[in-house]
Length: 116
Image (cartoon, rainbow, N blue to C red; front, side, top):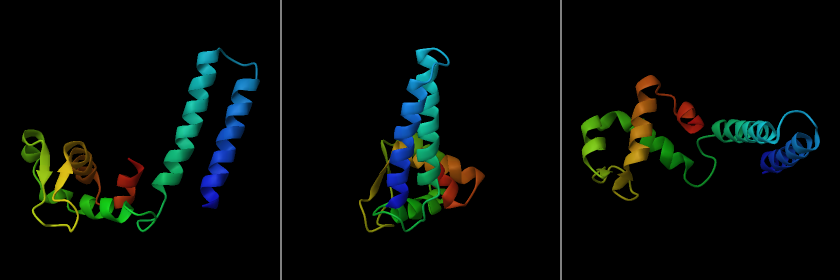
């Protein structure tokens, strides 16, 4: 929990420093602030453990099974049917299935999937 509080304080400080300084145009300041904020959030959320949070383990389990479904099923069905492979709902969103399958093509490491 402390990392999230620290992240909130740092984002607040970045915002103050970005908008109080006199460099660049206003649009550039907003881009810098957004880049810094989203980079910090991505690093914190991507580095979390597989057992952190209520649903992270579920996402990791589904990612590890991503090689079991086919591309044609992702593109032709509204949802991918898992037929009792997991105790949760038996369907998965098409976008999630696409991202899981795409990342799984490059790596089997679920930590990379959490970064995406």
